[in-house]
Each structure stands twice: as structure tokens, then as C-alpha cells.
Length: 327
Image 1 (tube, rainbow, N blue to C red):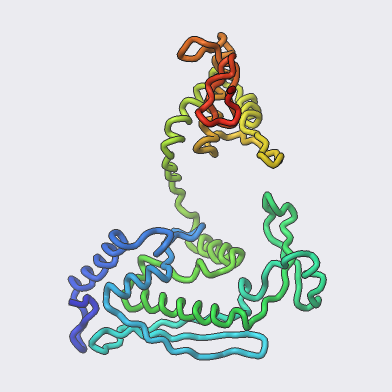
Image 2: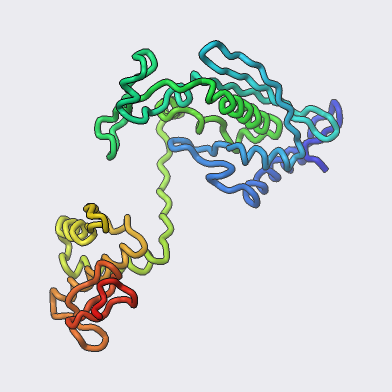
């Protein structure tokens, strides 16, 4: 039986309301996946509902979406307002949502220029320099942008308006607003941060939650303790010396001759690079006290940067097929 079906002019019983909320929670747990159907926008506490999530909830309650499009476009802007009605198989309308989108929105209005030549060739009133937060790859935080062609985005903004209307319908018709918010993921980062800041000021000081421990991979679980133990053996409690050693031992040169800078935190590594670092540090740790030897009794002199294995004085010890193997 459809959980949203009601007897005309009669309200839902409290048991039916509870059952409806429980069904949404069960769908979230059994069907929906975080990051695909819903997700938490940075700075917010509540999940935002995504389009795949709204489709899952609507199909659960057997609600069909009937969109109605209002074209508000002008000469240089495509703008659509969509109303979405939710209809049960019986024909009963259970709710309505509304959404709007246009090519004048920040993320559709501008795009990054392909190169400086395109930027200079674009008329001054259709180009700009956007100032944002500095990053590792953009120290000044400046981005050269040119206007998009609105016609290229007409279908995109129409679909976005429909999506917003559909999500609004889902939250309204199923009473899921206490589980999800809407549309924050569609806002530009600067505006979203401003809205989140306003919410924090209104609500007072936010609760500080303890960060969740990141689940280690199999490689990290094996090598992190060994790397830490080797660093402690080499440098004791000298943090700066540990960082310097890590940066030196993790730097390498690619096959095309490009130098890759090392890292000061081994917890950023995984896989083969972490394994190689572990072997290098264990060799250094053993050299600190005594000349290391392998299982067969021959001394270890180095670690192969190609295969990551310990190399003996006679050049043996590489993995089979390693290009550095002594023939």
C-alpha cells in the first residue's frame, strides 16, 4: 500500500506519519549511498538531497513527476522556471515543487579562457579576471574568464531547473525536509560559504564534533607502524629531523626527468611509494647501530627505487623482471 495514500478530508494518523518517516530512513540505509544520492556540503550539518536520491524516494512512494516549464528567457540569457507536480497512480496530486535556473548564474555565465590568446581576443565587456582564494597551483588566486555562449547551455539550465523542482517536490510531498536540505550544492562556493556563515551566526557557536578517524588501507595499516618505528630509531624525538628525512627519502625523479618533491608526512602516502619509503627507513635505522644483513646473511647496501627491494652487495635482491637487476 502506498504510504502517502490518504482518505479524502482525513489527516494521516500519527502511526502513518511515523511509518512514512521510518520508510525514508530505511531507504536511505538500504538503497541510498552517501556521495551519490545525498551528501553533506562543507560547513553544513544536514545532508543535501541529490537528484538520484530524490528519484529513489519518489519511486518508493510511487510518485510520478509532471513538470511544467515557464520560459523566462531574454535575448542574451536562457532562463527557465519549472513547476513539478507529484501524482500518485490513482491520479491524486500529493505535492508540488518549483525550481529555476538561468545562464546568468555565476557558474554558467563564465568559463575559464583556453589560453591568453583567447582571453586577449575576447571583447572587454565579455571577459574578466576573477579573484578567488590562492591555491597551490594558483598563488595569486586570479583566473582569466570569458563569457559563455548562452545557447550552448540552454538545455543544461532547463535540466537543472527541473532537477531543483523535482527535489523540492520530493522534500515537500514526503515530508523529508528534516532529513535533507536542497540546492546548497548548486551554489557558487563563495555564496555558499556566506550563507553557511550567516546560519552559524544565527544559531550561535556550532558544536565541535570530533573528527572521524580515516580508515587505513591494507598497505597503510602494515607500513605506518614500521615507518614510525624506523623514524624514532633514527631521530628519536627530533620532529624537524624526521620531516627532513621524509622529504629527502620520498623525493624522486620520473622517467621523463621531472623532479617530484618529497613529503614531510608519511601518512599522505600509500601503496608502492609507502612500501619503498618503509624499506629505505628501515635500512637507515639498521645502519645507525650495525651493518644490516639480509635473511641469507649478506649485507644490505641499498634499496632499489624501481622495485623497492633491498639490494645486496653483489647486486642481487631485485624483484624478478626489475630493470635494475644484475644479469
